[in-house]
Image (cartoon, rainbow, N blue to C red):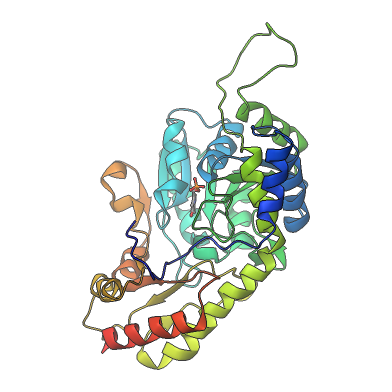
Length: 376
Ligand SMILES: *Cc1c(COP(=O)(O)O)cnc(C)c1O
């Protein structure tokens, strides 16, 4: 990543202030390990915040998703339905298990998995004799997917759902926290997410047995007694107690960070709507944490997102393209895809603006000014 002094980042870490108390205590008490009191502490905080019954903190969001799919017993050759409009991190865990992603296109309102296309995809796979093994739903850029409709389709065909809520901690659908709708939900605390542990993630679930198995498999399947047999593949996926300490400080300010990110979105909307830039409103039932503010260029705009991003870069401002649809990536050229190509069209017109909660009004004004110049 480019770093020049004074740079305006897309999504920088934003400390709350108490992180160092938790970290200092961990150092003082010699809990410099993947065990220690900050781990159950952070798990408790996550449950409190999301209303989930169980949480297991892990060393990345990718690890959380990998474990979730493993716990659903996804095997080599299984087909897993997933969005094409998502980061590769949402789909890599499917590959780790030797399973096959089956891509489902998004719908225009939320940019997330389209329930109607999901049903078409399931029907088509059933016709080929493959019953999909599970569905991964992603809440892109913080916007909740249409969970009611998606879950209804999933239930109708008896397929379990995992929510990749890595970008959407604190977002709500119908008043409930995302991540709590599926059989399991996963979060990321990577450095650019709404809160960070410098690297980390979590798995949440209502199911005590799944949570217990997640903990067990994430800590190399350590049995209480020595000399017991290992019967399953396990992982070293536990979060460190130091990182969990950062997380405890961060979660204290999560609500504040959501409010601040939403204010960033509103600032851009208030100051740029007359330029033809299109903003993505929250559909009914959806409350977005506005992790990133995304916009679509006016169809009349002659410049491409790439040119606009380069113009911002000249002023030391980091902006980015939307996720390139995965079914167009070489890695997935043999994977089935269902849809009408919506996400390809979005990517041709869309970009992510600097959205961090620590951006000052002065910085936001600078982004607006540079962007206005670039657009005309
Ligand atoms: C960031 C992200 C992940 C991966 O999380 P890491 O903590 O970086 O491993 C997975 N899915 C989505 C949608 C993400 O944005």
